Image (cartoon, rainbow, N blue to C red; front, side, top):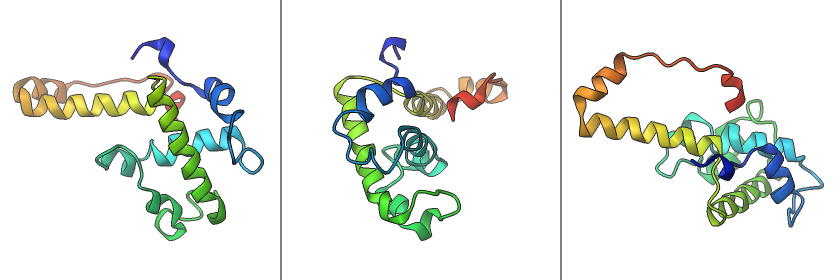
Length: 138
């Protein structure tokens, strides 16, 4: 995870939001960025899915995600998900990463260590991790 390949909000807005984005007029860059990190890539359901992404149908169907939980209007959710797919294609093509990718990688590493070396996992399991400024990951 090379720091120069990290995509943050500033970079997202400069490189993705201003070029070829179909939702620019209805959804702000900050809202789109927040939805991606909070629901589509950063939710528990996303982390539990095989590819680390909330499936389209779970995001688009208001009944499944809830209108109070995600305040993106139902008529814009398909478009938001399309923008997310464009974002994912861009970061893959450019070999970039975001905080959700790094967290997912750590979770996978921990799960793999449990299978490969249960004793080492047991030691890690007894450890504590303190995260300062955890709000920076949301």
